[in-house]
Image (cartoon, rainbow, N blue to C red; front, side):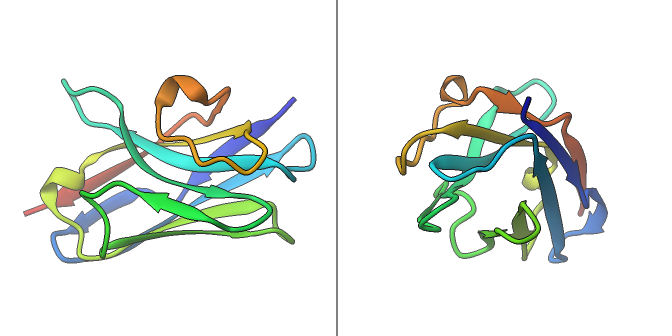
Length: 125
């Protein structure tokens, strides 16, 4: 059974940085895509970014391009979301996701089978 455990959330001032980590376990992830979604209070879940495990291809939402980067460390079975120049509107619970996609990048939440428990990111103005 795939398990995803997020860490690294917290409170930061606008303009600051945070790095979220997602430790994955339960199988090998060749052929998988992994990514991040976020959900703010009263809003729908929103795609942030994703990465293919094998090739490292990435996709990021327009709202975070130029500020966030997504990467993975195969040796540590961990996916990272580096968030720079944070804004109050980035405040949300951030979820790590995964599924076998055979190299395809997916941006819809209903496409992902495995979800972490979420980590809170709060950006103060």
